Length: 114
Image (cartoon, rainbow, N blue to C red; front, side, top):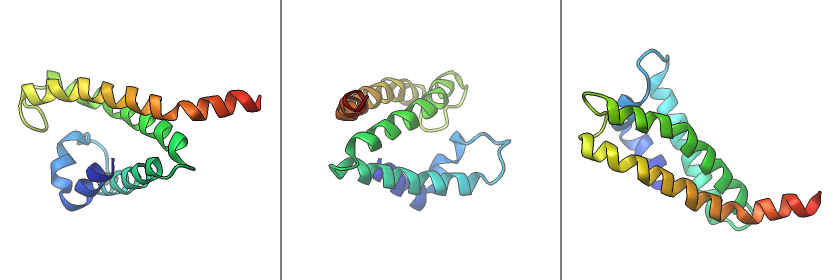
């Protein structure tokens, strides 16, 4: 997450094809999402915020998943080729599963407090 967030900031053109053309402020969306990804990625590294940050990662990955699936069916994938687009979808699913596993202590905390 931290690496991806940094790339959002230093190479925003890399992510531009993923942002729908009809949205205003596309470059700002990329920058804000980059800062957010950096913060969430750092949150996963801090034990006190790890579980909650991991749930936020799950949310982000679920938001990004349709974009990556859409890219598989485009005639000209946003990044790379169709093979790269096909690889990104299962990688996204792995990140979701991994983040859910990291977030498990948060679920236990919520259940114990009820």
